Amino acid sequence: MTEAERLFAEHARSFAPATRLLPRSERGRIARLYAVCRTLDDLADRDGSQAAVRRLARIETELRGGAAMADPLVVEANKLFAGRLESLATLAELTAGVLRDTNTVQLQDEADLIDYAWHVAGTVGLLFCDLYGIRGPEARSRAASLGIAMQLTNIVRDVGEDARAGRRYLPGTWLRASAAELAASSTVDRAQVRSAVYRALEMAERYYSHGLSGLPELPLRVRVTVAVAAALYRAIGRQLRGCGDIAIDRRVHLPLFTKVLVVFRALPALVRPFGAAVAE
Image (tube, rainbow, N blue to C red; front, side, top):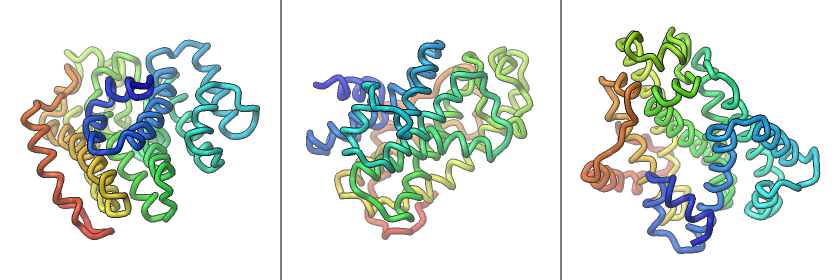
């Protein structure tokens, strides 16, 4: 197992199992993409040091063609995408997004939330398209929507964890509490948290519907992989409906039985025609 595959198997617990139907070479490419994105995220989220911030800034500059490709991550990205400037520019946008996480994050409104989600996850949908040579603008738009939907799920899942790291991704127009107030969960208005989580989930559902309707553009085995991974993410969000404030206290996980059920329920989405809405 390569280092990229090890990272993928260890950390992508909703997505990695869904890739087992793919040939080894395709799993390897997806694992390499995941490793690049994960490394960027870890530099901002897990490290966050000034050295990490400087490295992220250099990576963004190199990806935009403003300096020679010297960073190992940029070299790997260049190999993965065969030097395609469009793909490297998209990865630069992702890098700019994760750089925001190196500061105190207090998103202001819905537009700010979607802008953030596009930078850190919608871009990943576009990069996934690039791996498979998908160029159609509508298909790429749907892939970006799916990335945004999954990021919105991550945000509602990690409200408490993010707050303890000094970040509040739920918009201030929805939730007056600061990250510090959310971290002190005993004093926060939990009803307001539930309302904000519900609004984020409603938004996520619209993006899931748009994103999943583009599945037929993907090769069949990849289509299965994406459908299963998205269904598992979506189920996490649905588990938080009506009780979203529990995300302040703990991270929600799906039991194994629920995961199996979700996978079987996801399969009918694979036969819908391109552009059809995905059922709620």
